[in-house]
Image (cartoon, rainbow, N blue to C red; front, side, top):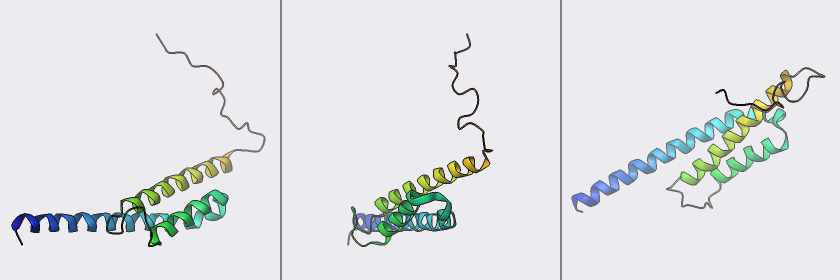
Length: 113
């Protein structure tokens, strides 16, 4: 085996290991959001379970040594779940009878000269 081939194999192995570690870390973060599923509704549950099933299921868009598609799905689900959680918290803080939009958002803002 030539030196160039050995270098390519080592670099490929390091990249594969790095993407695997990234996918596992994202999966752990998604699993930690599981405690919020009761408050996030059906969309949150579908995003949570769909992302985990896609990451575990052996049929992928890209072959398994390349975990970029799994990382993308897990990151997208994590972003979606985080936004849902922020929306639910904002709704919980709102007092009954308080308008849905904060005051002043219906006004047109003009730039200051």
